[in-house]
Amino acid sequence: MRPARTLARALAEGPVVLDGGLSNQLEAQGCELSDDLWSARLLADGPGQIEAAHRAYVRAGARVLITASYQASFQGFARRGVGRAAAAGLFARSVELARAAADATADEVWVAASVGPYGAVLADGGEYRGRYGLTVRELERFHQPRIEALAAAGPDVLALETVPDADEAEALLRAVEGCGVPVWLSYTVRDGLTRAGQDLAAAFALATGNDQVVAVGVNCCAPGEADGAVALAARTTGKPVVVYPNSGEAWDAVARDWRDGGADSGTDPARVRRWLASGARLVGGCCRVGPAAIADVATALAPAGGTG
Image 1: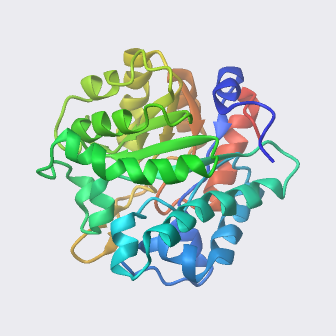
Image 2 (image 1 turned 90 degrees about the horizontal axis):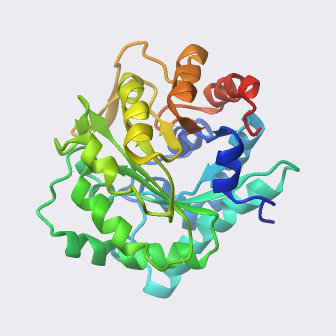
């Protein structure tokens, strides 16, 4: 059952708790995710595990669940022998599993269908580089079928997330036009720039004046990178800000493993409160941020009138 309010309305009324990293929770449940499809493989092979992971975040206080479609694509499914119709069914299943977990609680819980970047589908760390050598139009053609399949499943919002490149953001915003679903746009950043090295204010400005975009911000970055980006996103666009950084560790694409990045935490209550003061309205975690950390975010948001 859909929430009584739209997510945009909820964000206008106060901060909302987003979930954490789906992959780390699946691994905690004993799932093996070394496949190029990553968590999307379980849409076919272990859907019950995905729903269980979503439920863990609902119990922790998350009120927005991001689907397991981040690394999913028609091309990736085809390489596994999954035909187009069956692949469309798996995209729909990602929304259905999150909705089932949302419906298991009396609280309002929104479903965000993940639209990961082209680099994620390459499974080579390309989402941390951008600049794929493709035109905006080519990227738009790649994303369009995924977006259509996810939108048809009826999510509350599309999460255009971990975007490393302003060109890809432009392509994504073109691809979602007319799909009938609101979106948020979230970049992955480093050193105050997009991962492709572009001016971050200019990248955020792509969402200015676009009523389909209900929030703009950053994810899948170090928590310290998010500190300045939150204020910049709010100042540039005038929109609610979404922020969900990693644990502080760094992904080694060659070794396919996480490296210790220090004790920098995105769930520290004082940091969360600073983000709220700077314009954050949708706050959670990305890679290596689990239910316990999201419970800390929910506690930090509660005094601010947050949903959850």
